[in-house]
Length: 389
Image (tube, rainbow, N blue to C red; front, side):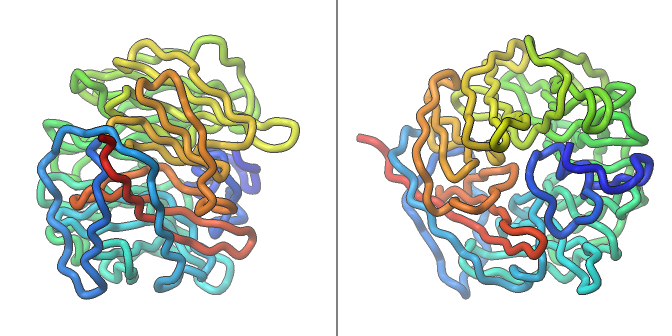
């Protein structure tokens, strides 16, 4: 876990996410699959992109990344925790900024095409909070967050601009995924890893996954079932990474990752890719963190397929038919989820890219992240690659 700077009973998303994702604490201190096509930037005054119908992925070559590090409150001690697209196709990044007195305030940023950014003013969060995730439920956008005391925040929006608070949750949702019946979220409630289900984004039902720990990742398996990932055990003392499987988001089965011993683990990223399911986990090393990649063809049988001594792998997604991971200033790509090829990605040097690498309607990749402590800054990246002959 990231360093414990508050009583465990009062730990909010700042402590849990900094621990679970295995990266340095930023503004929250002192608490803790589609093809890639050519770039098609539509300019600053462009209309939002309409999400495209899913297309079969194709193999692509090297990715050319373009970084944007200027935007509203990009230097106001921000922290990035999630990204996605609103129902109308606009890109959104969620996290927090500083209120000027050292306290985080949940924040969201929005862009039509990833080139120019503004604050999403309609998504208002209280002092001490963080916005953790955003997802779509049909034409309804849903965002989740932490009030700062472990109480979960939820907002819904019919248009991605006007947001209405839903009743608070007793725990915090860190990640969400869409299902045929609604949304499934995973997180933590009263120190226990927990899953939530909803059909409308307003009323949620919860299910405890284990007595102690946290769940921070959830992805769909090829057969339509769900895979969640996190740890079980005591905060920062004796945690063990595990996965949970579910056919409906309500009943879950815990599965250990074979051979892992209790320790100070984090679970920074996961993705469902054309090359299979991947989960990135991380542990402390002698000179920094060590990244591990676990892969599965079905979400049931998991194998460690890569160990990275250079640092945590903190973002996951797809690049055409390949699985893609980013972290420690490099990219990892795999055509089968088993054999990984690293390459230096200079544009990410010094930055911590967070969680999701998503594919936009025009085929470009998108991700976001932050850098620096105690005064952080943030950036976003779009990537384009040509199909291989």
